[in-house]
Image (cartoon, rainbow, N blue to C red; front, side, top):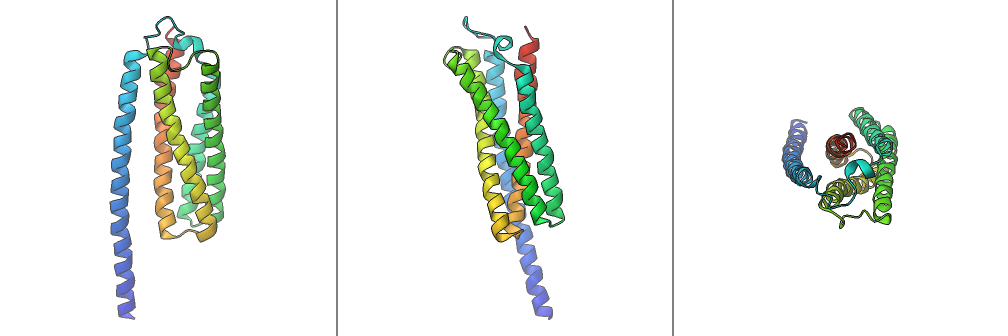
Length: 203
C-alpha cells in the first residue's frame, strides 16, 4: 500500500514538474509574440501617415463594423473563461459547449476581418498602395493569422475532449489555449484603440 502511494506521489510530482516546464516554455513564446506585435505597432506608428496620395485611416475604416468584430472577440474571451471554470469543475460537456461557442465567435470575427480585407483590395486599397496600408495589413493580418491558429487548436481540443475526455494532457493544453486566446484579445484591444479608433478620430 505504501509503495503504491509512493508511486502515485512520484507520478504526480513528475507531472507537476513537467507542467511547470511546459508552461514556462509557453510563457516564453507569449513574450516573443509580444515583441513581434510591439515591432509591428512601432512600424505602423511610423508609417500610418504615409498615404502617398491614397486614402487615410479615417477614409477607409468603418468603426461600427470594427466594433462588432471587437464585441465578437471579447465575448469569445468571456466564453473561453466559462470553459476554464467548467474545466476546474471537471465538467467535460460544458467545457466542450463553451469552447464550441468560443470557436463560432472567433470564426465569425475572422470572417468579418477577411471580408474587410477583401473589400479594401477590391476597391484598390491593398497593401501595395501605400506605407500606411502595408503596415495596416501586416499588423492586422498577423493578428488574424494567430486567430486562425487558435481556431485550429480549439477545433482539435474540442475533438480530443469528446474522444479522450479530460485527461491531464488535455487539461494542460486547454489551459495554454485559453492563455493564448486571452492574449490575442488583449492584442486586439490595442489594435482597435491605436489603429481603428485613433485612425477615425484623428482626421
